[in-house]
Image 1: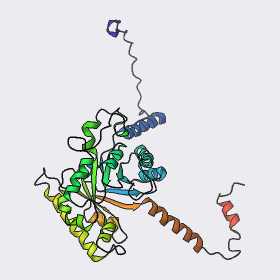
Image 2: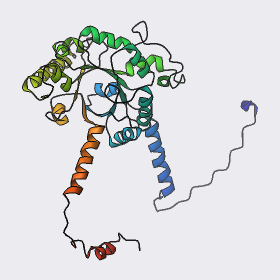
Image 3: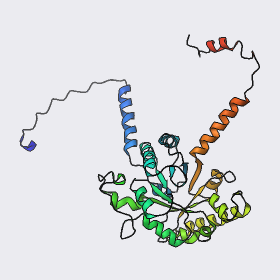
Image 4: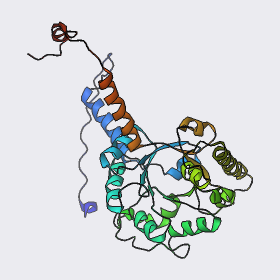
Length: 330
């Protein structure tokens, strides 16, 4: 009934005060403005991995095998573009992955879930958590790639079970836009990590719905008979040939925009560091594993302490210097 109420009388205008000095912005006002800007950035939607790849970004990620939400959070705050929560080789399952996804979401970093196997049950449970993408292992043919894609789509385009009104992916049913955008937003990554898969990689990359083909150099070396020698020249040659086919298909996509041409993803290795993958044209590069980073830091820390040598009495007289430097509280 507000339209029935009498309009309030206008207040008389006070003439502005004239001053030759510029008006200073108060510190409080500046702080409020900065806080509002930060809040606005935080509330803005995080760009999807798909949109960033389409924009030409090269994405750098970390594999999380520890299933530690704390390490997931640190990785996000460190600036990784994405984090792969590894359910294939890590000790955790869906419940442990959920805690890591919550930590990554809070730090506004996309999470990719690597499945133990490419099957509809694992894909369904993982997608219901709401990750930015899925990584499906050991894809060796175009038919296997098409089947993997079908695990990630609702009928009639796929076989994903429907529980969208109650799962985390749809904000437990509060996100009305979920069904209309979930397939467009979710990044589907097919791992090509065997000699059989490499032989079919151009056809796998052309399968509609495959967004990224992820090279697996360690498993590839094992499938070629070089488990203990992943840097073998024959393994390197097979990788280079596979890379060439995927990258050439990406270049040709401009001439045939309706055809699918997957992006190229890869793992860094001691003989093939992340910087080299970036220079060769990879679009997604996983440069490290959380456990490996901690192992390296721990070994270096212990070595630094064990290697430190000091003669008896060498530290005498340092106490006064430390007091003068302000390190003592007495």
